[in-house]
Amino acid sequence: MVVAVRKAALLGVFAVCFVILCGVSPLRAADDYSGAWEIDHLFDTIIAHIEQDGNSLNGVLTVTGPFGKKDVYHFTGKCEAGRIEASHYSGHVFRGALQVSGEISGVLTTRTGLHLQITAKRLGEAQKLALGPAIVH
Image (cartoon, rainbow, N blue to C red):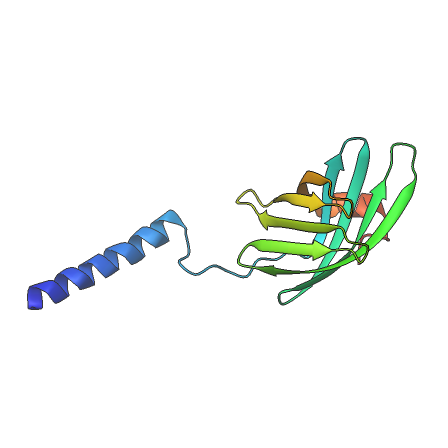
């Protein structure tokens, strides 16, 4: 009995040390989706600015076409356990996940049923400043 308890304790200590040495936390920290994200799709540049409050998301998506035409979409959504779901009132829905690389990847389903594979990359501070005050809040 004493030997079994010691083995269990040593195994527990080993597991904790392994986790610390590998730099992996056994508890998942809350994912942060807030900020500006860029999506390149065909000839369009798409910037999404997301605000997060707990598991709730809301944001503005600006699509700039190759000739400078801009379309703006407001969206709402939720996030939980690395998964994200957001939608526009017209019926467009995005479902995806935060990747290890820090990107968000998923599928945008349009109101007409078209499925588009999307990958969004978080913008750095210098990139946000270059976009102007409309994106930087």
